[in-house]
Figure 1: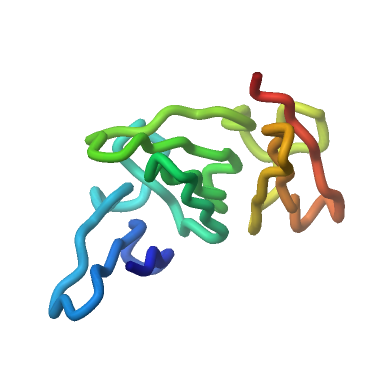
Figure 2: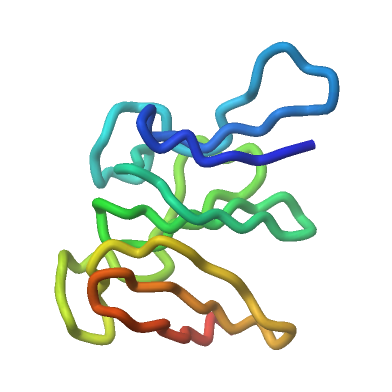
Length: 118
């Protein structure tokens, strides 16, 4: 299985091995900042439970979409473009460490931010 960011269609897709079509696992409802929307999703991370984490570039936030969910929730950012600790300027990548800390690459602020989610 592969999970891909389809940024120009504002969604994240999952492709099962041998499948002819992908499955939308996040977004896919035009660009926007509602809980069902993404705006140019960039970096993604999928955990062992199938939860998809998305660096939502133009909405300046990180979204979490549990497996099978119809909408996501904001876990970092989402407070508009900016320099503050609760803001991003076009997040492009993300990852987690073994302690569950989230690291977000904040492109235009030229920084990596760490968030403790536990």
